[in-house]
Figure (cartoon, rainbow, N blue to C red):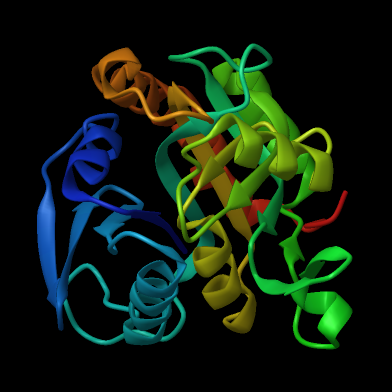
Length: 242
């Protein structure tokens, strides 16, 4: 069994693959390319939940083996990974977050009484819960904070919006754009999911000069280097909920 890691953009993919030793193999998929090192396949699936879901679903369905030939369901774990904004000062710039909940924060409807999540409309779901034991092990291996990570289709750009998100999702540590899409695809393939984020900026008014993208990418590399054995070994766990 293998681990599929899905990022948004190539610079995040490359930060993850740098964590793993050995030669790199590249496996072409329609519209994408897997970068394979050891037990890890790393894919830049595109920005936003829709692109992330499509890329993840296609990789899971394609199930390429080490030789590039088709194989059935080779993945034991899917990880959404990359940089993201955090609700500081709980999670400062350059720190790591592992999601104990992957939440669709803006999937739903506006109403006179405020935002209604998609579940209040009687559709689907708005949250996935990664295996708690895996969250604990990865947090311990990397020094990451554990808490909810919000998936948004529009990145927050104001203090008012940041406040509204925190009011709706108390305890949220970060926002990003792909986790829920990756989780949706993984769930349909019956594969457990995890989300790991390195903090590049604060959620709120956009100030590109204050972002620390390089530091966040370096932290992402360190995270996967430190957690590689945990992630690879997770396939042997029998209790995905404990």
